[in-house]
Length: 547
Image (cartoon, rainbow, N blue to C red):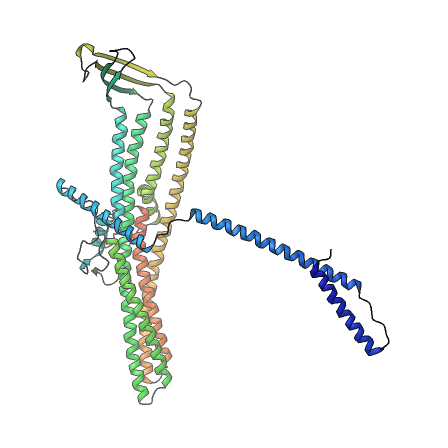
């Protein structure tokens, strides 16, 4: 049966064809017969209708499939949807955490007060809020070392390493165990219930463990040495951070002075231009360009003020002071002290004293000890044991007449373990290779750091000398351009350009001084220089901040 839609389309097509044919015939010949329907056109219409129907079916099927997938996804999401954390619940959780922390702190404080102990954790706020602290570089470094939490964590790690040595040594000490058993037994017969109480002391003294205990003790001692080196590493990083913060604040303060000086210069120049414009000797364009330059200078000065505030807060954070603390620096300009050391001397010192280099060497030794520990399982284990026991039917079970004791020595030797020990030894050998490769990699990385730091210092020193000359020239050029303009032989643009050149020269000079001084601190850090003495070599010239 033909589809209804298709049938309607076919009928309409036939009607249109008929009407068109009749109209054409009427215009040409009123006696002409009606033209029949074009069957090929009808077949084309039927094919298009069939294709349209299939397209509609496919679209509906796709919509049903998408709806089923969406419903399935929604169901899965509803099944695993977490409980919403509302603002009220968040507030409740935050308050609970704060209350629990306060209670815990109060309990700990009472316990310390009872035992007359001091809390080792330093809390920020060693000076009153909005207080003032006078600083020079040595004091800055020392305050950072006294406060730094990473250093304190390293000190805790050292204590932990010392306890690990005691734990390893305990493996060689006698082990004394006491056992007490209490049993009650019974059966179906009358009066068959009885009690049994036993007491037993057991002592085990290891005589030989195949080198396992000795290896663990040696490894623990190396761990302590590693922890000591880690303290030095963190101290050196802290010292560098403190020096960087100190010189950073000092540099920003100098830049602040440069930009405020530029504002004063441009304000004076604008006043002069305005006065000359008022008497008709200068054009309005000079006033406008000078005013724009002054506005830009003021914007830059505001940024400089903000940079000083940020640098001050950063240094307060390094020193563990409240962020609002006002810092008065003893220095007012970045120093340029002589620092004489050769690249080879710096390399040799780093290879000998850099904590990371020594820690990498310690890791190699620990890997070697791990091989011996793993191989100890293939060696005999010798121990002495002794027991002393009592038993009785009444509590507590100590009847001298039932006392029994034993003393003996034993040897344990494992002939075969399926290759487990051999596999452990082989694994330990691979760990040794890894440790050795890491040691060489560390040495190479340290050498690269030393050379980079050394070259950066030399480059910064050259820039300091060059930029100082440029600053002097730029200042003189600004003075000359001002005189020329006031005399009427110069133009306003020359004055403004001279001021910009002076600003840039001063900024470059301050940046070079900062890079030089911080570069020295960086070189000492990558060399592994001791933070307290700061001594590198007796023949070398020390910088002023090393006491």
